[in-house]
Figure 1 (tube, one colour):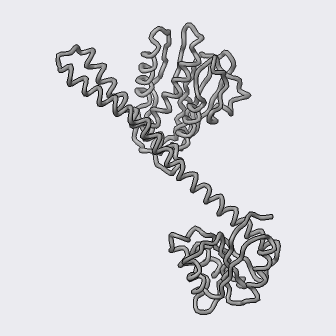
Figure 2: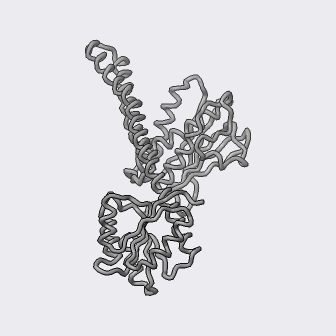
Figure 3: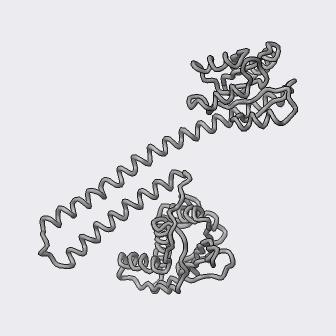
Length: 360
C-alpha cells in the first residue's frame, strides 16, 4: 500500500477525471478534482496537495499557463506537476518541462505506467522535502555550534586584552610575545571555525582561491607541531614545491591534518622522519608526504577517508576519524584528490593531487 498522499487532478473532461481518479483511489490516494485551470488556482489558495496531475489542453486557461502560475508562487512552487496530454508532438511537452513540470503521461493512460510515474514523483518530492528539512536543521545546528565554539575564544581575546592593559607596557618581551601568540591563535581558530562550518553545510561554496606557497606553509605547520612535542627527535625533509591555487584557510587545515598524522604515527620511532616532495605527473602537482611511522594495511586503505573510520584503537593512537575525511573533501573542493599508500610497520605516504594551472 503506497504512503498516504493527496493528489489534485485538473482536467476539463469529466470522463478522464473519473478514470484517473479511480486508479489513484484504488491505490489509497486521496483525490481532489477540478475541471478548469482557474478553479485549480482557486483550490490551491487554500489547499496544498502532494502532487498535481494537469491536463495541457483546456478551455479558458490551458495547463501550461496554470503551471506557470504555480511555479511563480513560492508557497506552492515545489509541488510536482505531471502533465496529462493526448499530444504526441514534443513542442508542448518541451514547454511544459521549461515551465517546471516534472513529467508527463500520454492519454489514454496505461495503468501501470500511470501509477509508476505518480509513485516515483511522490517519492522524489518526499525525499526532497526531507533533505530540505535536514539542511535547515543542519544550518541551525551549525549556527549553535559556531556560537558555542567562538564565544570562549572571543572571551580569551578579551581577557588577554584586559591582562595587557592591567600589566601595562613594562613587561618582558617574552610575556608580550606570549600574549600576542594567544590572541593570534584564538583569532585564527575563529576564522577556521567559520570556514569549517560553512564547508560542513555541503553548500556550493567556492574556495577563495589565491596563489599559495606550499613549502612555506608546510615549514610553518611543522614548526608549530614540533613546538608541542619538543622532546621528540623529528626531522622534516621538504624540497622546494610549486605554488598552488587554493583557499589558504582550507589548505592550511588540510596540511595540518596530514602532518599531524605523520607526527602521531611516528611516535614509536626514536627518530621520526617526514619527507615532502613533488612527484612527476602531467595533469597534477602531486605532493607526497611520507613518514617512517607504523604504517597501515593497504587492504583497509579505502576506510582512511571515510568519516569516523579508524584503523587504530584509542589506546594506541588518539583521534576521532575525521581528519583524513576532511582532507579528502577539501581536495575535492579544489578539483583534486588524495591517495594513501602504506605498509604495516614501514610508514605511510599521503599523495595530494593539486590541478596544474594552464600555464604549467
